[in-house]
Image 1 (spheres, rainbow, N blue to C red):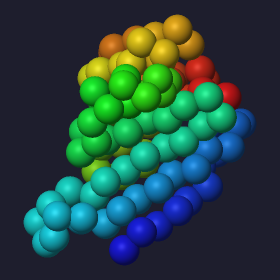
Image 2: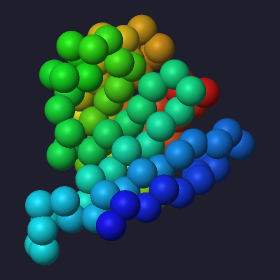
Image 3: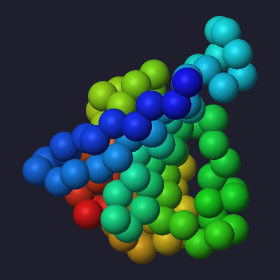
Image 4: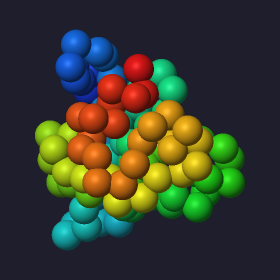
Length: 99
């Protein structure tokens, strides 16, 4: 099941998209948080493809949107780096760059 949620992060609106266990029972959810300038994706998705298409994106693990906002960046595209996104930043800090 796919769920879309409006998220308020530091006073700015983002869209959270959750695809429930796309690989079947026992698999993690696929999560994406989108902003005006780019997005945060879970480890289920491919940073190399985001880089190939010139997306401002980063990878942050988490079982839900709250965990993604609290957890650190594990990988970032070159366009994301241009916005000031760096490994180790929290998802909440990244959102400030994606407004």
